[in-house]
Amino acid sequence: MKIVDVTTTTFRYISNTVRDSEGHGHPGDPHEAKQSLLTIKTDEGVEGYCFGANTAVIESLVKPLLIGQDPFYREYLWQMLRERQRLHLGSLSDRVLTSVDLALWDLAGRAVGQPVHKLLGAFRDKVPAYASTMCGDDLPGGLATPEDYANFAKWCIFERGYPAFKLHTWQPPYEGAPSVKRDLEACAAVREAVGPDVDLMLDPFHYYSREESLQLARGLEKLDYLWMEEPMAEHSMSSFVWLAEQSDLLIVGPETAEGKHYARAEWIKAGAADVIRTGVGDVGGITPAMKCVHLCESFNMSVEIHGGGVGNLHVLCAMGIPGRYYERGLLHPFIDWEEVPAWLNKRDDPMDSEGFVHVSQDPGLGQDINWDYINDNLVK
Picture 1 (cartoon, one colour):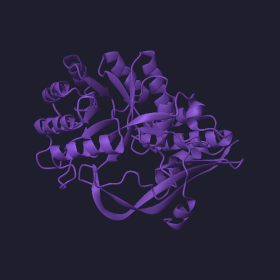
Picture 2 (spheres, rainbow, N blue to C red):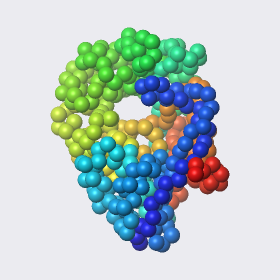
Picture 3 (spheres, helix red, strand yellow):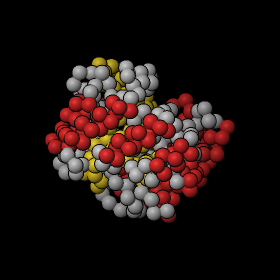
Picture 4 (cartoon, rainbow, N blue to C red):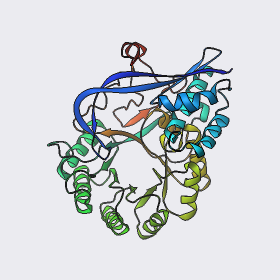
């Protein structure tokens, strides 16, 4: 089997999410947005797909490298693209590697009639999810106050069935942000609202100082929170070593630091985190995410997967070491997360009443693509 074509398709959809000046998502008025689909085609008629491709980079850099290659040589193809990043850091990002790698895994699963998590070596078919909020805002009844977070947490836990809850608190450009005091007030309000037995986590402003980060950690210890992630710039690994040594709270990382599995190895060696973070979008696909998983297994360390999405769900269901939760979100009181994206016929991460997300048993990544919608909304 050989790859004969690599294409991207762009189409329109209606979004109800807007981004602030710092890039954080919030509820907004419905507006037209664009989505893209990467398709890798073979000479035997088998295809693989991934949403979210960068059309310009795929056409200029990726496609010439993939044409004529055996799509089952995923490790070779991923390593080849990784090496090309050295001279193309401005364009060939890990997000691009992710889209190509996911499409290749999808193709392989479709070719042999098996879901990806079984190709990886399945460990389970469902994972408990935590509710992961959007960042704080100033919308009345949204996530504008500690009480708003408490009310939303109660709904997520007691009505929707999530077993755990994570706050993303206020970030610039919102007035008064960042604020350690306000973050802890929101965390305290949530703990009081859901009781002592629910796992709670915090993802705060990402550029607090060492002292502010320790103040947060000490406050979360008193509230019996499970973990905190990325309260400081992750390029200062020594700051995380210091924080992990000073605090009894679990510190999770790295999330956005470049370096794929190599960076995780350095954080483990340095003692910069108690729980390692990885995700397909963070490191360049399923292929390197599993390298991170097995690396952590060698050190008997837990791994928490960053973000939702079909690729991360298959990784979680293939992990033989603790990946405690699937991150479902980003959630907000004004957004219906259960709404199926227009380009799919069903959600990738259906959650039952007990808080478990079930991985698809369909071949490949298992996405049920709404081809009629895509073809009816093409961007020429």
